[in-house]
Length: 222
Length: 210
Image (tube, rainbow over all chains, first blue to last red; front, side):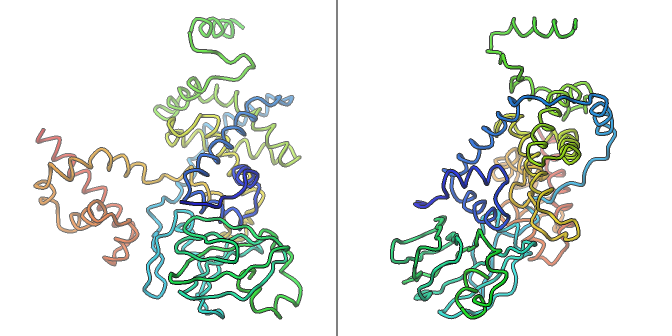
């Protein structure tokens, strides 16, 4: 049972297409895993569609619209989009197999090289273009991330497994948002854990030497 | 004018509640979409376009603060509606919601996607609403599942080996087409064409035997 969800506001912004790509990928993956939030997203889309149909219409150049209409009806069909069949939903990490939710499965070709990070962990960046980056983080059993704080907001989604910090225990589908005021020490016990982590304010980290000095910032912040 | 009046009359005669604020009912819009999907009906599309284009233009103008970009958004959205009406599924939401989500996706890409970097995340990665999906395949699957599994074991044995192996892995072992492609070391396109041919052949066999 998923205990931790994105806020209503975040779901709404996601459905509006207003969140940055990194955060959108994390929320979309959560939504794949969470029937409750699927409903929230549908409701938000429906609400925005209603606003669209009810909003006052602008004054129009009807000639331009007629021309557009004609142009559309004689246009070539856009190329078909890739289907889900084109993606494998299995992630093979050193022989361990993980089932990826659809959003992540569609990102398989963007998953970069896995590297070791301190504390029995592995990390692979997902390169979604622009300056943003999200990471898949694999924590083996008995892993521990030294206590750290965040410069911006950090979001973490449990894809598969269990980890805990001082506050709670998090399992498949749980969505955790931490801001700069919160310290925490994520760790695993008897189970391993695959998580997806992103920052919603990556620009704060593209410059600044502190990023290089703090080996653990790269773990969650890239 | 005459036409408008007629339309009003027809509406008043129906028993379902008619919106009074100039919005169209979901049923009516869904009817237009299915006509477009079935026969590329120009009249249905013209009506849908006249209804949505100004509204999308208003949305785009609010979002971009630029009427040219807003107009590009309208054109791209409605082009998809024209060519992909068959992807609208009434059980998944209203026509307005479907069209809104297409516009939302296009807006996301307008704002985010750098044309020079093809690999950037696109809205389709997040909301694959226009993916030709497994749709065809899913429908075939739903339709054929029981038959496939219970009644036609013998037909299935008659398939050429290369098609039978693919069907076996996809429908009985639940693998994705990509996995089958990887596993057998054959191109994905070949897996797809073998699947299609095999389903076609099975269907023919069922039809001739029924």
